[in-house]
Amino acid sequence: MALRKALGWSEGELMRAEAKPCSRLMRQTAAIFSFGGALSFWVLCRLHYGPRITIPRSLRWASTGAVTVSGTSALLVRLFSPECEPQNIAAYDKPLRQ
Image (cartoon, rainbow, N blue to C red; front, side):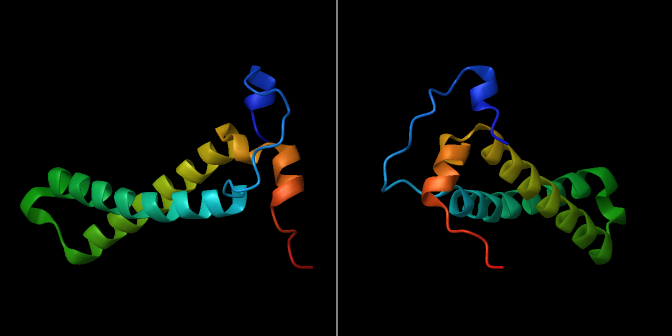
């Protein structure tokens, strides 16, 4: 799923063994950006509604921001990170439990 090879940014080499696996990198990035997304969408809600803001409305905007930004950042990590190239996932990520 990584776009690096299609764009010519990858030589197909394995990353070093002590680097973070793709799954952990995506999970940590999504967690960090969910907080930032919630905070930024809450600010946008405050700017949009002004004094008419209500608690359910601000929570709805914050949760939308958290989901949107964390999902987008995880997708971008998956598409453009060298750790998420197919050969590195096959070599270093743990297989899913079946």
